[in-house]
Amino acid sequence: MDNKRIVVTGAGGFIGGHLVADLLRRGCGNICAVDCKPFDEWYQFFEQVDNRKLDLSGKEACFEALQGADEVYNLAADMGGMGFIENNKVLCMLTVLINTHLLMAARHHEVKRYFYSSSACVYAADKQTSENVIPLKESDAYPAMPEDGYGWEKLFSERMCRHFREDFGLETRVARYHNVYGPHGTWDGGREKAPAAICRKVIQAKLSENHEIEIWGSGNQTRSFMYIDDCIKGTQCIMESNITEPINLGSNQLVTINQLVDIVEKIAGIKLRRRYNLAAPKGVNGRNSDNTLIQKLLGWQPSIRLEDGMEKTYRWIYDQMTAGPARRAVSGALARNV
Image (cartoon, rainbow, N blue to C red; front, side, top):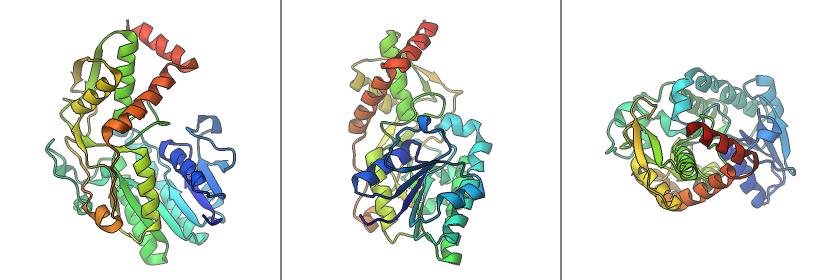
């Protein structure tokens, strides 16, 4: 790769950390990694990168971060799994400040390309009421009825990217991520998503010999889950493409939450009693990615099987839960649950 300066915001997070790692593997030697968290809280940290701790909700921080940038991958957001999204709508919506100020800075610094990570949560709720969901096409985001809070912020920021392109000539690219999972991500604390949460619960049940698992909702909700390697490849392909409108980036391997638990039980070599918490946040009843457009425009779509990605994710979370301080914390939690 040439020596263009690439800025990755949200670099201390799950997807951002993997993206920085892949850029380094590809030979990029001028990377600026930005996150608001202290460095020791970043999921992946690389000494050879220009690492900066900045709160990008502020305009001045965004202008500082993007100085000299050729390309920007904006992955910064205050978000998490459904439990976090449903209970922190204001925090999710305040993320609009990040994208707004970054776009202003990108225009000012004459950034050549700007990538925005949107979400499948932008899609209209009335198209996701059944477990037997019809895969969501890009056009299904309108008429607008997105996930309250988080989805509205993402949809508004998509439009902001569009108008910065149309009004100011900033080359923007937008991908709608569908449930990204994998190692080096959040697996406890309230922000974790379903794949990591289920891995954690199955591991806890196995270690405690209390062979029961709580599932949020009926377990019949349907989803597709994209492994992180597919996400990183697709993100860079979209950035380098001529695709100017928002596009789906997700697996189309549809499963129920019960089937996801089946997969993790098989990996763990255990069968658990299932207790369904119908009062817990569960999101829409069904969501899947229609990959017609990405196949047409890129000749590619995410293809890593859920079973393969979940095995890698389970092994990594198991190691985190059974090593050092994490092992002591898990042991304490198990003791309290006995």
